[in-house]
Image 1: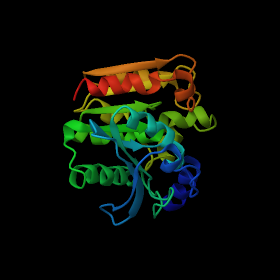
Image 2: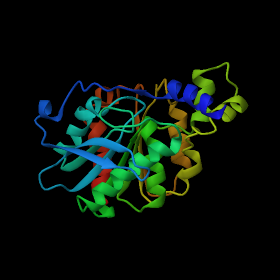
Image 3: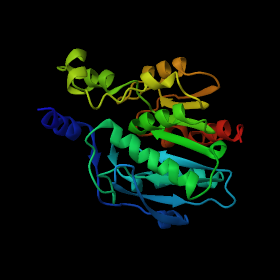
Image 4: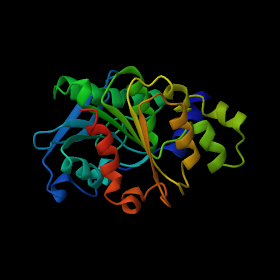
Length: 259
């Protein structure tokens, strides 16, 4: 019964796309096709975008829809500011194999990308930035609670999927959400207080998907040092357009101060 529930829940949470709509070459970015194997034997794909004499490397963990091709323009802003970027697709997204059956699958994928930056690209912890976009905030926080990296940057994060469920599915009370989401709780609240790394959050005040108050709650519970960029009138998917250059400048300044 549990596997049937998980299939149903997974289809309501994850919206992977196999089609690439944009490529690094369209942005004049130098890229390397990367295929790595997770600890449970799944081959996942990503693009490594190398900056000229990089200050550090950013592991970009994207949200629940699309794939890495929809985040190239976000990565470009970081490359322009001197940071290499590893855009990673979770299992089932883009060219990555497999499918997500448990919240730990996303963490395993992120951990494989993190280890690749350390072992293959030789970036020290002090020069690695974990960037979590929405869904990606969970593996970013978990890795940042286990490793003292340069910084953890979260874009439009949430407290947990149990908290989100009643907002998007009002007929689903929290006790039912907790039961159905047993394997997909994706609780950021559980891990945020254990962060070993500096935290920066950017969140739109009109976020219709992950309420702004959730970003504030995570920020309040996180240890110092930390920073928060409130994007006035920003929604969930328009922060680069609404914030303009500050979308990159604010977190990049926070990160650079720790290099």
